[in-house]
Image (cartoon, rainbow, N blue to C red):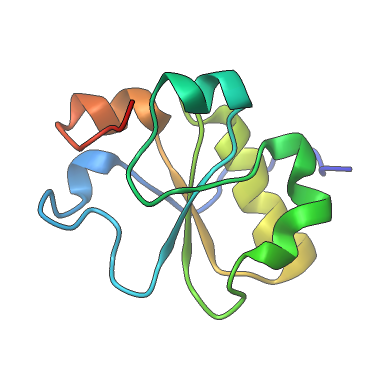
Length: 111
């Protein structure tokens, strides 16, 4: 379903985001973690579509909006980013370091 990982996908580290507005206007933050991970804490306003559901549910995302993709540490979101960019033609960027780096950068998490 997902292609083998390429060496590099577009990525940004949470520390590079604006702390007052970490998700740029007009962008979507997509969380591809499993339900239990989401329930443990997620970024406010994120859209939750587990990685395994993404091929069936990518149409729920705005094809005209840039997408920031996050997971726990950045591996699954890198695969999702690559797939969204190459297979679907969306503009996606991996959130390097995932929710761990998000929290580490002092960005908000809802529990």
